[in-house]
Image (cartoon, rainbow, N blue to C red; front, side, top):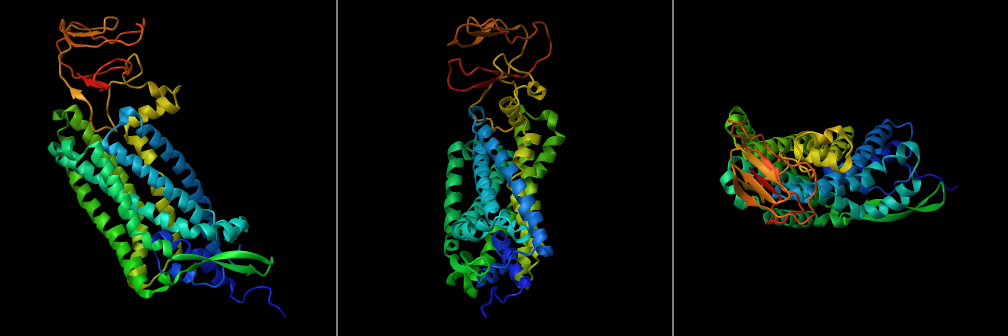
Length: 450
């Protein structure tokens, strides 16, 4: 009599979809999953593990990932604006890009496969599409995670130089150097994760219940070697993905936090540029704190697996969800702490919002504040008193104290719009900024600080 189902019990088969969660954590239970000769009986709606995976991965991970992709795309659009051009913003654009790749691969590897074991939906994806894309998506996901970790470290290092060593920031924190940093990190991440392209294979089986061909993911001979698992999967992963970047982030951010506290105590004595750098450092400090919180469970899971051979499936699934959350929330942090980012966001996507009108605006809609996110590149500073200050737009001349300090010619027809001016009789000395419209000819700098 021909058996209609494989003899493996349902409880053992549920380990197949449980082990998927170990991809980002690098746990050894992935080897057990890949070494299985069948993945045909993972559907079990009565299993609590299947329910937990459906909630954490099938629902929460996919929903968070969807909003994360949306937020990262908006972040890339805003940070790519000409007025946001700076070294730190270029690094943040790279971080948003690799986070988007990480979210997409996470949804395809964990989110969508987490739906079938509990609901029975997405059968074709689970048995036909997912096994074929896993050998490629898995190393791509690990590469994206490595890039994300080291870009976060690079952003912190850039802020450390800008806050703690401001005299060296002009030479070290440049747009060209930021490009080099991103390229080097991507190359390093690809080389480090290159062996993972040979870890996974796809094998064809016959599903006895439906009498159709299905595919399962299996381990390669390289992935089955105990020495490879011990050295590369466990210890190198812990060193390069956790111990080295985590230790560096802790030390650098401790120095930044100490400097921020000292600066806040003397805030009245800081220049406008120094206050902006401190504010930006505070915002990125929040990014690093979220990074720590969302990756700590994955670190604990790896330590338990590598040192004590203990595997906690709920812990692994939750840690993968947190990794996805970490890649999705930076946009929220930028909006909360980045005044300039928030202002551009409201102007581009919420043009009729009342909040978009906050702050002092020039006639062309540009504001007189360069709060966050900007490191002050391509800007010239000049401090003047505002007594008897006037502005003549039709003549293209800006006058201060009766003298022409700068002459600007208009390339467009004069408009009867309002002119920025200041009261004549005042005894107070101010430092403010006048944003020159992009249509005016000049030396290419769009903001002149007065």
